[in-house]
Length: 115
Image 1 (cartoon, rainbow, N blue to C red):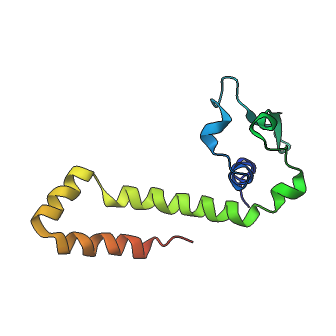
Image 2 (image 1 turned 135 degrees about the horizontal axis):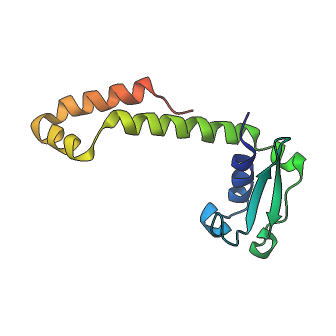
C-alpha cells in the first residue's frame, strides 16, 4: 500500500506542482501531513494558493497504483546506486575496461528492474 504522503505528492504532480513548490518541510509548509497513530491526514493545506484544491480521500485513493510504482522504483534506484559504487571507482573501471564496466552495470540493472 502506497504511503499517504506519496499519494499526496503524486496528486500534486498530476496537477502540475512539484514537491519543491510546497515550501520548506518544517518551516511554514504549504502542505503538511500528520499521523497520530490512527492514520495520516492532511494537517495543513495551503496549496490552494498554488492553484490546487485539497484532495478528497477518494481522489487520493486513485493514486494508489502510481504511488506503489513510485515507492518500488525508489527502492530499486537506492539499491542500484549502492551497487554501482563510488563514481570515482567507476570512472577508473571505465578507463581500465569499459566493456567489463558495462557488463557489471547491466547485471545490476537486470537484478534490480524498475516497475
